Image (cartoon, rainbow, N blue to C red; front, side):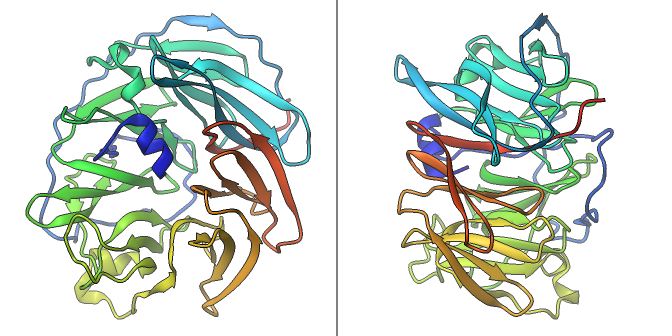
Length: 387
């Protein structure tokens, strides 16, 4: 979750974790084995799941087949809470498709089948195939009463699971996860303050930065098969913040810098570590790569061979893991706060405070696809040809 979004939600130590049993969804990467990690565990309470649906029909023209970027823009205020609009747009088309209005936040599944968004009356799931919309309520929690304090649901690349966090400063935080295979929504209390989570491509594992009162920032690995979460081993002298799994599950990229652990001379930037080196330290012989850049915003390419990042001067660059080289490809501006690589590898989306631009990885093309106040990326979606 980027800085402006965290400020918008009012979360000072936002917790973003999820653990669920995934049903369905194609496996695009090797499952991660975290069972030999540090014995320190985080115990989660058993979640409840009692979804209730209220189907309605929404007129939505199915867009042509292709890859689309989803985004939200602020259209008004409800008190001091921004009200947004969720839309999608293809890189090759000028037409913008509006999916939902008067929402607090929203996102689109990577397979182009479902949009999720929070409105005043709770969470809604909208089928992008049929246009039907379901109000998802009755999760056994107070979610429907306070939807504005829930972060946008983020999806695994396989669209097998969407996860988020609900909470407020000086209040309890909880996991929130949605299973599109059976429409279940589950919410579980969190024992720690966690944030900056990332799901594995197949939705089997979730990583998150958590604040431990005794050790400061740590990385928690949450197996989604119900196994106990574990705390990973971070390289000595570094803090493993904002962990991001490579699409093939082989690497974890993380940000290290001065944080709540109180280390003033902490190396600053993006580091890369083989997954096994954070889970099975005794078998690790590979050194940590980095810092590859003094950056806080980055994204893996779909084939896990490249990392796109925005440096502190607002320049967009690509780091190649094999030769360990960096190529600068464009200027984004110093207000850039989010970056996502398209699933086909053709575009890199960058969000600033006022617009979203698409860059070709070779640096030859830049397109501004959307503009608006407090604009936010809401994921990429691939729409298949209608049969």
